[in-house]
Image: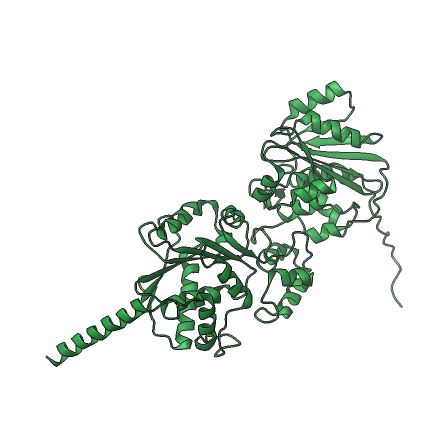
Length: 515
């Protein structure tokens, strides 16, 4: 009887507390209340250099939450190690047991995998434990759930059905920028899961190369705060570091950025991951570029050498979604030039948004021409190219066999005596000879050209794949954005590189035995 009375008393007290919570007015300034509560209540968990200290919301995170508070979907895009996970945890805990709590509140965490989502759940659990918050952490069934007296935070699996049958007030999506195209249905399910409660979706991620995240950031309905280095930034540019890392110097250490830049000089293959994770550029962090954009910049000169001697030409003909491009190299002087063309339909601004590439700037710089229609006709492009190369002796030219009949027909009618060969080139089908040729010319600084935004952009978005023998080739299918001008340069280099004057090595002579 005594136990029964105690249980009934506890139930009455819980019901009274719930009634008080239901009648409690939400804060007039929810973000301000959350920031004040976090600074006064939350502690940095063990294992961090600042363990035990107050865990305040960073200023840039507070601005993001304020701007996106009433939005259906918002996104904070920032380089790694700028307290993204901590921001997610503070937001979730504020709803679970802080000033934003409400009876029956339901939240969820989703990511590129359930293991990644479980890491974020673990961050919430660690902060709550360090801060002595009244929450329960259930790790089973995996990936787990966090409970409070007024709400729950679930960890969702990353399969396509996640969220479809649920009803959430808030869904936090971690690392959307690394989600592949096949995750589209997952995001659709998450959006559906907040529809009944007029809930919100908050993305916190690096930019990555995900087409899904690009759509989210560029959608006018999304409140997006993007902290990223410029596309043409060098890896040791401190202004670029600060642009991508608003927590640099307070949350993320400057010494780390300095050490990574020095390390990458000796391991160029790690540059894509540094640019993706630490400069927050729209790149695949696992990709291997043909070489670094900074390697090409070392070949830029204010006044290029003359167009002297034989010219070797690479051509890459495109279709509706790809560019038509050309590259010319003069081995006698090392001069290099490139050309690029798009159809006017769709508008260049739409192409720029889709490919995350500065096409409008390329047009202004004269590196990109627009042609009527959806497709660049070979005869129109080649007419302009021939006009630009008047007086030059084309000693060799090559192109992929795509559109070979149309191109040969134009060359026959125009009377141009260009020895164009159409063959399978540039994509690893030649044993990697063309790719290696361009790599040697750039890394040995044997090419000289004016600053070229289209070429730098193509290199940053390039991906190298290797055949069974380790031979490199451009992976046009998996490279994000248009790399057609790079493809043309690879073809030109394959033709031109054997004609560069070789550096003669001094002959070794026997000098006799040392006395």
